[in-house]
Length: 214
Length: 408
Image (cartoon, rainbow over all chains, first blue to last red; front, side):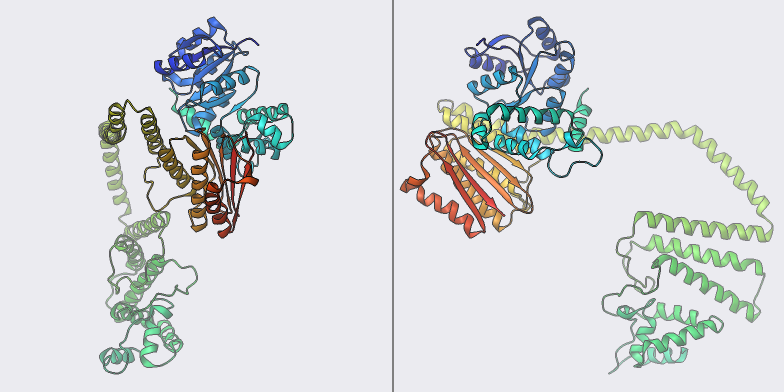
């Protein structure tokens, strides 16, 4: 299996160095960047499989990077990485197009695993992200809107609850007696709903985030 | 009626109860109820007498108004006024207008009279004035005589504005009617026009200056708020983050301690950033209580405990027990999870709550519980069952342990 090619975008030098040393043996790090501008040109040059993206950066943060890269390089996948606990930040970067979100306290091997899953097109839900999503989709769906997008199926809810409880995809598959592929499909479906739903909780978070951008 | 009232006022001593308006049984101000009480007759009789007197030349209204002012308000909760369309100020305005009208009619009967033209203007002025005065005296504290009925529960701003508007309109209408009647409206119009022109001219001249003044004032205010926020943040960082950094430097040789310090500071800072500042305040909720428990376990055992909460609920006795049980489960996971991070997931609503505590340790066979775990298990399972909930422990060698706590 070829190692995924990764660009690390984060405005903290120490953090980039830390990720580099932790992931060196597990993925191929082809570049890093400290600003939105740098990230856009570095990603254009190196065409990585996965971009590890800090949510908070000057000049618009991870959301801005995705917005500028995604139209030109739709094959590039993004994994958001943040110390932020704020739901609106996380939801905003997912809605911009990131395939997942993990906190910066994640261990090296877990991070490499997440990178590989994002490379394969799967969604990566940290327990915290799963919790946010359950929160956002709690309660009745709004009256006008797409009921398919504005509501989670009972199965999706179940998968998310297990993710929030700290279970891995494989463990969830075993517990729910379905295949790992099916669990991944549920997670991807939730990600899609998160990106496209017009539920006002999610729209509100996204709107607040956009207000803060310059 | 009048004599009866005067008599009772004079002799309101000794065995009989003092003459008081009775707000508990009032229709308007409790005058009749009070009189009835004092005279030992049904207030209805007194009321009928007053109405009859009112119809006979307005005397009853005058007497009632006088009694309202003169008789102090009695003890007791005020009953809601039983007049349909409860609008205190408007009633008073109407009352004052009628009072004015009756006075004028009396003067006219007595022959002290100038012109019919003053009647309506004066009545309108009386009504509008009463409205405005009532409005402006409202926030002031009781003199019960001039403010007979208690405040309506919550006068809305809109209501206040509309009543003030009505009062102003009445007074202006009175003025216009008077001017019209005396034929000086044309002259007044010229004056008004002149005043209007002057106001507009002054407005055009001074508007930019006033606008600038207002803007600079609000900018200054915003700046002051900003600098206050900055000062507050600086103070907080100094008390927390800088202290922790100093501690970290002094304990650099003890990585475990440093990690614990950093983790504790991180939690504290996160809590502060998310506005969860008063952790010990009375209004504690389940999610923050779980966070606190996680923090304590983290500090005591040096294992990372991550809490994810969906929904929240008040911290009643049952929820307290749930937190205590969850804390035991966290301690358990921290002790036997071989240093693996502990995941806590809580789902709560006012209906019920579920908490899952999971570690990635070696796990164990629940059928063969080690004796040292029995006590802990008692304090988890037993505690939940005593509070009408349940606890379920799932574990298998090699796949970690999960404790599920359910509160219906």
